[in-house]
Image (cartoon, rainbow, N blue to C red; front, side, top):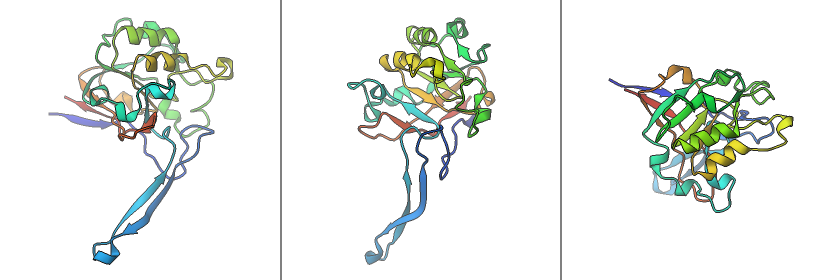
Length: 217
């Protein structure tokens, strides 16, 4: 017996992922071809930036010589043993949240419940949860394969942070893919599932939407 649980957001026309980012444009049936052969087909068109919906970020997002989507090994984003961590802290998730968790080789999914604010003004507000730099270092030292969070991202984006992105920098420097904007992590057990979050294989892109899901055994 197994159960599949989708933990990614839909991408819809003109939706907002994060305030200030361009909205995706979805055009249904915007192109057609093959009429001259009698086998006409049509296809829609999506115009969007990579950081749309639930997406994965790669090392090249921060480091010029880092791996991009085309370099991504499937072993880093597919069929990973998963673990859900629910921190006690309402905002800054520190290293203590992972002190009793075996993260080696696992997709570590941080459940904060912040996805309840998806597409509201509060979602990208200054109170959103994030990982501290020390927490990111613990995940790297522990051998985490992937890190995901059900919120805006792994870093503090409030004015007090002054644009610093230390947690993301630490994780990407270690080659750990980061999946942001997950949802419905409360439908997963703490352990006993495989996690998948595979993006398209696009050369030159550092971030791209994923269909993130868990297979519960």
